[in-house]
Length: 95
Image (tube, rainbow, N blue to C red):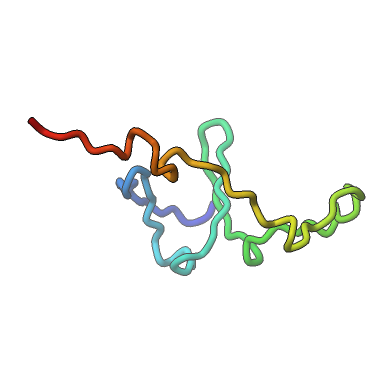
């Protein structure tokens, strides 16, 4: 059986956090994968930089093409507050 460590869960913002003992060898900011199975938790360091490799699905959507810079331009949608005649712009006099 391996070493046993005890730690306390504490509130961090709207989440809870677990402070791991330095003896476990994790570096600050290191990404960890946490698994839950039948009420038991296990965690291990994540290899790599956390990016997803999409190389295996490249070409599976042959009709999907990158947008050109012209296609990325969006049409300006009219907004009611852009209209100077909009009644919401009219200030009401205080009597």
